[in-house]
Image (spheres, rainbow, N blue to C red):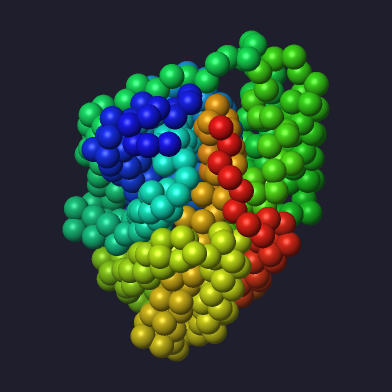
Length: 477
């Protein structure tokens, strides 16, 4: 396909300029989403002071976003396929910006939690729509490898820079600006989308919308995340946790039954999972999301609570991670034209696991140079090697009319993985401390959490080695 042809059910490209503007728009959108996933972490202590959060309530500043984002991603991807990727992307950006503005003006804990939940709704619409646009614009070959390399660099750099931006804004402008800063970024993304993305033709509608499936999937995924994040208050073996998770499993099982038997247009075609690339990439992505979300959390806390860094300094100390991700992403682009995606994912998983194992040696009497810098560089380079190939693998063999659905599925596994990992590993680290807040206890808990992250990445490498096909699949038409 040349740059002047139209992708079926995708954007109508108008030469290199149009595809370049589409790439710029998607890159800014992904940077925005990634920044928002980490920007509040450094500001949490100041948010607690400013709004009067207690220890348990404060975690819902993170969890409220995770609940709606993770719970609605499948639905968001399907809506983008059905009604047009540009239209849904524009709507999602608008909702995200308005929620961010409201969050900055919050005066009570409930106001901020509600704003974060609505942010998640906007993100669940815009994330799969943006990724589907990228998939349709760059369906194969060298342009696709480079486009996903840029996307992965913006994704991971946004996550790392979110810590820096959050630290600087919290210390010098006030915690409110970790919310306000999203508004100009969303405005920039809206302008690029309006100018650079052509109105795409929605996928041909194959019957009535799958409302029962949408309700079951959203309720099941939301309850699953809810049950997991509540383990910090109710233990994994408590009646409350077990009942919540059981109901979630029942709802998701019912969803799968509906998708298999419905005469409506299914929310997700189960045949997608017979594609080894889709199945393997999503399993890999689940483990990667669990490890990386936990890592950002543990490192930011170790820097502040053990090493005594302030919010701004902690943000600066996370910069090497962003640099390493960019290096890894560039390497993935250069190798992507000669090395199969499976090989890159195996190598990236092993390198990232090695970095996490290094983090597993964190100690109370450590230092940034000895305990954080080197491990950050190794982990981030490995992460950069993984990110672009896993996204490209999960979408390259998918028909254009299912690009949004596949993108929503991939984003969903990343978010569910992040919620699972953060809740499970955070609880494990806390239990390891025995409730103590001494530097020795905290460092030991964070080190244990990082060691488990290394095991998760080795598991991801094993999935890539055993599930993904040896050669890259051809794009569907």
